[in-house]
Length: 442
Image (cartoon, rainbow, N blue to C red; front, top):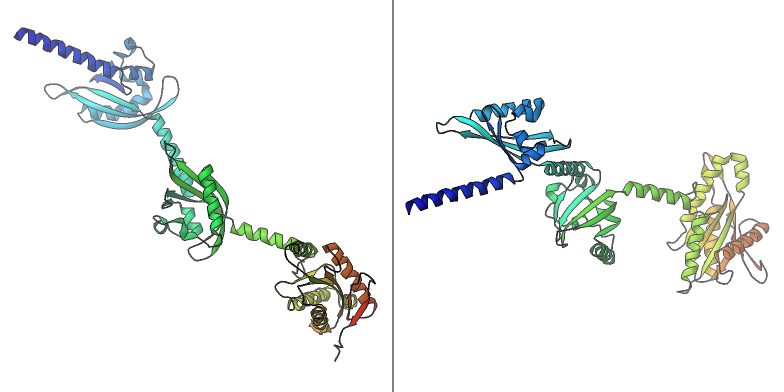
């Protein structure tokens, strides 16, 4: 019975050894054994495949023959250490047998005999090429994250800030410590209504992405405009996991665009609206008249005596005079009114919803009085007048073109009848009434 038991133990041990050998042979990691003379005594399949060797080619080969002079020299300090009984761990970039670059983490484990002397060592190498590539990508992403000029905010699904980059701090004024744990609402400007944010989140929920422009507020209270893209990051099950917002401060660009837009719609000399903006505003008022009752008076002004000022004193004086006229007209404008420069010495004044002809006439008289006041420019006292032609909506025209044309015709009638005159346009008789301005000479 004892003999049977011993035989069974031997059989079991052999099976276990064979099973263990099979596991080692098929392991993904490279496993080998080197004796103290640095000859290979064992190499599993992964080891042989890495170096492109058959079993009979690798067993008995020396380390330097297998690895080559360069790799052997790099590993020599670790070899000396393991043969001295010290386990080793290291990372190495090496070239595979097929010429492709690879990365491994290597372990040398000393093998001691019964007397405690090192008789060889096991080598275990794990290929980490993909991990290294991923690590390099992560380092690159981290470098971009840290150095990009765009602000980056990462939040959890509840909108709590998890991370911000340095550009976020540069743009908003909030440090990382101040921002993490907060909600992005700390930046809210109150420039957008609830409908704006509802539409944003609806698009983000539907498409996992939103791109647009958003007004926010810096830590110091200053408003800024940002162009932002918010992306939803999902987990492996497709459930929302994170929100990543990338934004750039476009406030300066917006101001530049606004300046260009302003130049396109305003007179360069007086900064008054030009003809283009005047017609745009006038057309808008006429369109609105379809929804609510609207009446207005369009006054066409032409300065009397301006040409002689230019001829006598030069264009610089003339330009300063036009600026002063603009300032005086602006002082008479209500918020709903518009005054524009439409030509060299021509201006248009739109009076919104006048109560009647009496109010229109009163405003026209005040315009003439304001312009008639002498102005001192560079030591010269200059006096000019103005002729005013008036067309009313809706009686004198249904379109901006009709109103301007008819007011212009009325203005020429006023000018032909003398200085400082007011004319109302009449459809039956182009200039039925002429109203003289009150005496402003004192």
